[in-house]
Amino acid sequence: MNIKDQLTQYYRWLRQYGINDSHSGNASVRDGDDIWITPTGACADTLQANELVRCDLHSHFGGGASLDAPMHVMVYQKNPDARAILHGHGAYSVALTLDGKDFEPEDFEGRYYFPCVPVLDIPHKDYLRDAPQKVAEQLADYRVVIVRGHGIYAQAETLNLAYKWICSLELSAKTAWLAAQIKT
Image: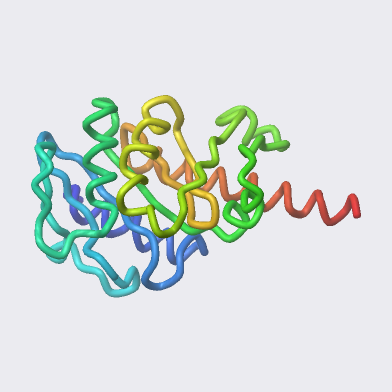
């Protein structure tokens, strides 16, 4: 399967397994200096590989690229090992971090993969201006980061690994939420 078909498949899985709704989140993959990204407002259920938008490492953004395209490019610029970025709106991850505190998973797998997940507080009105720099800085040091009230960004050397990180984080957040219900 070619890289664009793979990206489309992983974006669909984010929807299929409850990380995103039908039109939320975004995803990209780097192929040399080319970056393929989901278009703004893409429907995960119907997106085709030929609808992906080409950007590049030199900050050229193809028409119709996701609003997060500048962030994706900046993450790739700051982290040369990154080859894939997935963005999701996992309900448990978002809900558990609305207080703005960094998330420390309590489950074994979560603590093993990411003992501490930074939570960035970026006001809605400043998101497009500030998020690229802030998220890229954190993803240079962490596998995942959460923007408070918005969602998860995961970066990795492969789409499969980025998918693992985003799904593992959401499961850790769900586990923490369930554990909190038992304690009350």
